[in-house]
Length: 634
Image 1 (cartoon, helix red, strand yellow):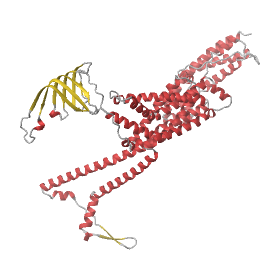
Image 2: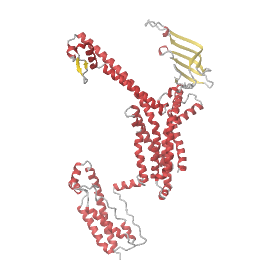
Image 3: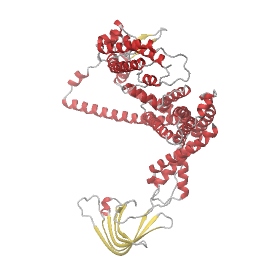
Image 4: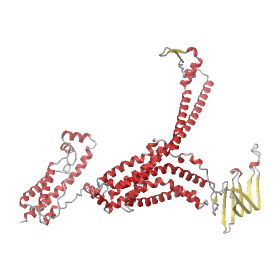
């Protein structure tokens, strides 16, 4: 098993990692192209990206490898041979289960020890690559804005680097102090230290104003205007073309650069800090409330009007006397000017309080968000290991059931299952990050959804279920629409006793008569109340089916091929218990009128009754034809 599984696992893991790495490249292609990075920088970035994408590629590789392994065994009948030898499916899976346990343990240590380092280095490198200025490749007939503070338009470029018909908008000192430069030609080069651009212009003019030199106190003063004609002019523009790496400590202090111990320590400290902030905010709200201010005023300015209370131990306590004020009457006694002043102060106090509470709420929100980010990262250390085990117990039994190997059906099924897992996992991740759900619910959502599927498929595979056999569902659909399965009767090489044809003739004639009578007395539709009083049972149809099976059983011992072929025309009668429910009489009436499934069951039974009438008609016809055959047999 290991010789079959491990090569497939390594191959599929490499393929899956390559696919997700291509997705990463398409996402960050704009940050890499056109900036002149060397092969070493790009290779380093791809290495770190591949390490960070292992949690996405590993479960998919396990699912696909296990599905292909057991699909190939089932397709080559090797799985059937092992089961025939008395080896159960769980015993066949045992070596792979132990192997996957080691893989899951390795995935946990990878998530805890390697992933933080890889993520810190990757995101630091991506940040540095984004900050690097692009390579200077000015296109023709287009305004080029990649140089900060400048917009440049070039009509034509010569092969030797000469720029023709140059127009430059210099707004490095602000749009109000912009300068426009036109030149017949020019050349552009980078300084030796790659910190500046040197632009040499020939035969041109520059236009600008000197607004920054005017007296700002005199607004109406005319702004000086400057026009310059030059034969040669050089501009020195700041342009850092070097690749400067960012400090990795900026990323290592975030949640992506911490292991479980560091995450737990950060969560504990931030939780204590958040609890302290909430306690301070709660005390501040209470201190600023009307109840608190009135009580404090009463205890401070009206100490003579305090009430004495006696405690349980006889000690005297003093509590401030509560003051009841009628604010409406006090407000009405004020003058209009005082009323306006009171309303202004009240509005100002409300605005100040609102702004203060909004600031405090923002502080609490930011701190809660940091805790959620750390919690989601903490749970992510474990979800990968559990996902590996779940996907194995989905892929292995699924391959044993479908019995299809290769890269066709397994790839399609694996991709569909992984897309479903990826969507569910992202939904839970977003919910946990947003604070809609607790972190453990969101991060373990995909595992909670897929674990029952793995248990169900393993149970079905152990019991040799045909749950994924297409013929099972096709036959069920055919039966639903009236296409019943035909009979298959084979010629017996050894016949123990020859049937008595003369004894069967009266029974065939009676069966045909009973079918004729049944068709004449029974209609397709049955009264709803009558149906539930009878409990959906049809004793006459059941008797016809029993008699037909007896005749068929007797005639299967015949040595006449015509008789055996005619027996295969008999239908397999079903539906004489249309409701499939053992309710009748008063109980059936109550179920039919008060249960929500009463009407759907009645409609299905009506359709089955239509099929039953068709079968009874076929039984009548075949019985008559079979009677003629037996009558002529000597």
